[in-house]
Image (cartoon, rainbow, N blue to C red; front, side):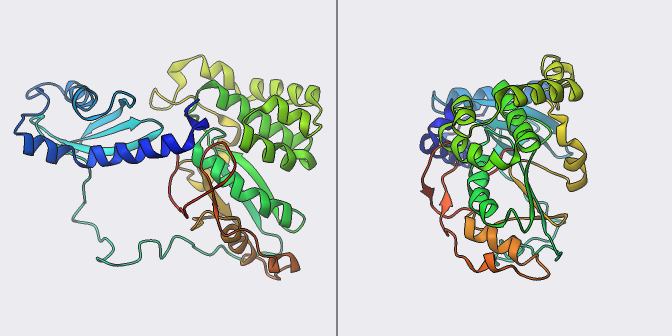
Length: 330
């Protein structure tokens, strides 16, 4: 799978963004007319644009696909996916120009030079025992990064705060993500004291069977839980019925749909402390610990311990990466 080669994918995604950002310049500088779609329908225009990207702008190892397209008045808005990242772009109605980004000039935006991350680390309300939830997709590179950030803090504060891993109510990484989501859900439910050991193994190796054994987890108990949860929420049956997929592209994973709706979860990862969605910047164990510790009415002694200030690498594998607050699967 691609997420076992994180460095390659991160580079590819960055390259994709750069290529798309250069698209309108490329068209103008080369004097071409863009995809020949003038006068065609909305859907045909979008498909022709995707074909143009794939045939002219993207390298062979990368492929753009159409997620959605809509008529928003003066232009067409197109949502496209490259790898597991999605982008909103805009097409002129004559099908000649692709605009990689748009600004709504009726809305107020941050002034030039302003700190756009100023509100990123919003402080959660205080409580005696903070409730901490991280919503992930188990094979999302950034969800895996957030889980690696989560683990040292969980080991430090699990007896002082309510902490758990929850799941976004759709998947983007094939059937394996359904299987692993169910695994992690059931381990937390049935053998929660072994969850940290299992997850610490999985986020590095991605080998769920080996990690179950390594954590000494009762596989029969987990298998029974997985089977029942799957049946209760109709997860596999909905996966097999594409008419149920969100936007026709994403299989549903309804185990935590009520919480997804409550917190308006938009993707993986989403972090909630005391019912408040917060962004952790950078995604390091120390930054995450501080976000939780400020949410105590009475700060426990454990909060005086210093954890790593380095961000874990995104995707499967060990190691650290450059400080990052961004990146999500949505």
